[in-house]
Image 1 (cartoon, rainbow, N blue to C red):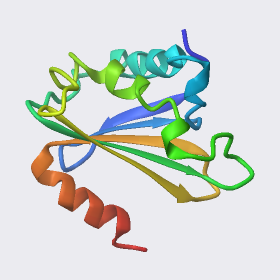
Image 2: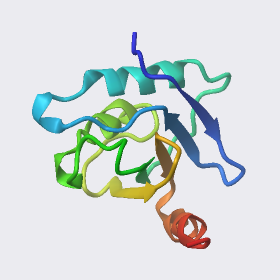
Image 3: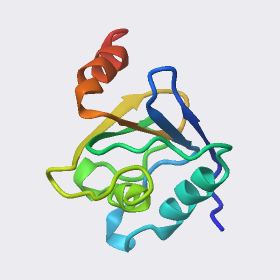
Image 4: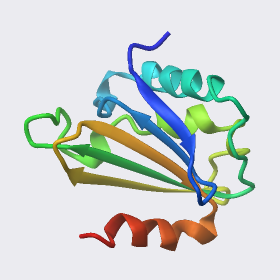
Length: 134
C-alpha cells in the first residue's frame, strides 16, 4: 500500500489523467516502487477499466516551486516507475514504437505530479492545451 494520495479520471477527450500528490523522487535510490503502487491503487479503484491505447503518448507534468523540489535535474527523477506501472494495463508495452514520453515541469503553488496518457495523434492537442495559457 502506498502513502501517496491522488486521483484518476478519464478526461472529456478520452485521455487518462492520474494526479499524484507528490513529486518524483531521485532515481539514485532505486525504482521508487511506491510510485508504481500508488498508480496501481488508483487504477484499481476506477469504476470502469482505464482506456487502453494501442500506441500512446505519456506526459509526466510535475507542478511545484523551488521550495518543494527535491530533485533538480529531469534526468535524475524516478519517472520510469510510471510507464512500468501502466504497461499492460493502459498500453501493451513501453518500447520505443509503442510509447512516446514527455517529461515537463511547471512552477506552481500546487505540489503534484500530473500524468496524462493520450493517443499519439492527440499529443499536439494536449500540448496546445498545456501551453495555450502560457
